[in-house]
Image (cartoon, rainbow, N blue to C red; front, side):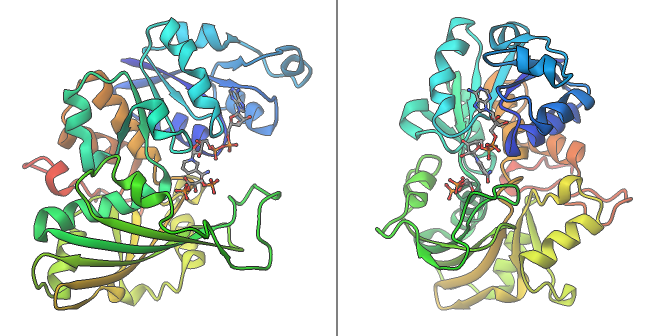
Length: 357
Ligand SMILES: NC(=O)C1=CN([C@@H]2O[C@H](COP(=O)(O)OP(=O)(O)OC[C@H]3O[C@@H](n4cnc5c(N)ncnc54)[C@H](O)[C@@H]3O)[C@@H](O)[C@H]2O)C=CC1
Ligand SMILES: O=C(OP(=O)(O)O)[C@H](O)COP(=O)(O)O
């Protein structure tokens, strides 16, 4: 049983901790938190050993028992998943190195500062074969792009990708973010950082991205145009993407107008926190014209990276290949399952699926 510590218990950290706890081959060694807020209380109530980063006294005042400090957590962990705010993770690296403990970082960290980047569909095997001990799981938007572009490149070849990312202004709990009444080119310079970030896991892909930030909190929405290397009809593309376990093909009959409906769909399905771990591709948006493909997809920024973190741990410690890990993660979480309770769990994942699943 692999003992995994989670440093930073916010939007991503609490979801990663719960996902690890659900895995048959992992247990949460504990979580580390700097501020004893409602999330720290929730961590304690969930049964996680809470470690204080910095002053432990405020935790006692908030009636949160403290199991130790960050060093103590790293000492009892085989791997650490750093889910601290962007930029903090890279500063924590020396703590993990001092314990000789491998660590994962999140998309807010600078790719070069960490060294290796990960997306299960794009480069699991490369990370598993390599000797990197510090690996960054690419950001939510980059995860969403990598998951669709990898199977398209494998099946048809990709000559060029152009994507406009309509970015949510902040997460639902981030009352200090915006804009509240505007539409911002973000960044105003082209390309946005997302294309180069895709190249950290798919180095040969030709991709340009533009970003626009809007007053919304639920999900990001991507408008994607891919020039393929051969003529393909829309039905073939639908079949290719439908084979992917982390792509949810939003059916026309569901009458899903946007992220608001998608979040309701997830809550109705009993998903924890209303999470959508999969890319949500509108089936009817898929259109082709010669070699040009167009579609819309929505990305739940709070949760699509969660199964990727679980797989990245297995790639790092080398105890499963991509197919085994993706199937194990999907089963434990219920990725691909929307009609709970059910015995139907999607287990396919293109090249990342095992033959007998
Ligand atoms: N929220 C999102 O949509 C996504 C975030 N990410 C990335 O994940 C990382 C974490 O982001 P969020 O979870 O959104 O942030 P968050 O602000 O929700 O959570 C960060 C947590 O770390 C704690 N913390 C702050 N300083 C700390 C320290 N020095 N040591 C330990 N804990 C500390 C905070 O109290 C909080 O609990 C960032 O790199 C971000 O870019 C990646 C994909 C999506
Ligand atoms: O990784 C994310 O977005 P990004 O892929 O646009 O950098 C998350 O949604 C966090 O983005 P934020 O930097 O707007 O908080």
